[in-house]
Structures are given as structure tokens and as C-alpha cells.
Amino acid sequence: MEIDYVSVFIFTFVTTFTPGPNTISSAMMGIQVGYRRSIPYFLGIATGFFSIMLLGGLFASLLARVLPEVMKVLSYVGAAYILYLAYRVLNADYALSQNSAKMLDYKDGLLLQLFNPKVLVLSLTVYTTFLGSMDRSIPALLLSALFLTTMSFSAISLWASFGAAFSQFLTTQKTRRLVNGLLALLLVYSAIMLVVA
Image (cartoon, rainbow, N blue to C red; front, top):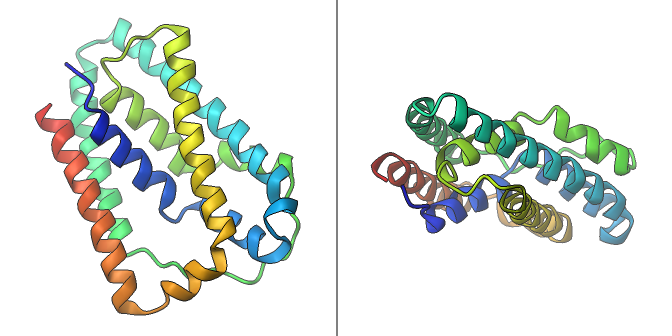
């Protein structure tokens, strides 16, 4: 099975750029203390994210060697998860809570990844399905984890830099539905390509 890089990109783009613990907390940090003072927190997120991606890739490699028949089943499970995620994105609320004024640091960003179900599921989904047939060498795993982390870092940077603008732009129901609908359709496309590949 050949890797469909367009589907990989769409899936990772939508999952890393849509609201979740990383993006929302980064937007709040950007709003409250500015981008520059938020960098230690972002580096903690990036370190934890990279670690989870690498562990997910290693786990998927183990599964591919020990139980190769499981990989096709996981494609269907992954597609079902992506459809569920599309439903969640379609109904996503972009409201940012103003309650947390705490300055978050590197340790907070790192620990967030250990308890962030979105990152854990992203790791297992991308490595057991979209990248299920990739070369399982350490350099390939490191490179793919670095690519995914770069996308994540871009997402949190964007949310932090434009957090206030996003929250104002996405407050109208019509705009939110349009953005959510487009993102949900992209996820549905990814799920379909995953099953038919």
C-alpha cells in the first residue's frame, strides 16, 4: 500500500489546527502574555508532542511486525475515529475562556501532552493507518515525528499570534458553521481515502 501524502497532510492539518487543549491554551497564552513570553510553554508542547508521535510510531511498528493483519482493521477504526472527529469539528465552539490567567511554562506544555487525548489518538491513528506502510527505520520515524511536530508548532503559534482575531472572527454562527463545515468535509475526505487506499 502506497502512502497518500495528501490525505496525511489534510488529516494532520485539520487535527492540529482545530480547537483542542494545545491550540486553545496557546491562544489564551498569546492573548494574556503575548507570543514571546509564551515560547517556553510552546516548546514544552512541542517536546511532549514529538515524544508522543515517536512513541506512537514505534508502537505502530511493533504492531506491524507482530500482528500485521491488525493494521487493516485499524484502518477502519481510524476512519471511524476521523468521521467522529469530523462530527466534533462540525459542532466545535471557538469561544476562549478568560478564566485562566496563570502563566504556563515549559513543564505545563510538556505535561499537557501526556493527558491530551487528541494527541494520543492522533499519534496512533496516523501511524497505524495513514503511515501504516511507511519505512519503519529510526530515521524515518524521527523525520515523520518531526514533520508532525512542526505542523503542531505551527498551529499553536498561529492560534497564539491571532487568538484574539480568531475569537472575534469565529463568534458569528454563520462564519463558525462555514469554517467547521469545510474542516469536517476535509476530514471526511481523509477517512474515505484511508479506507479505499
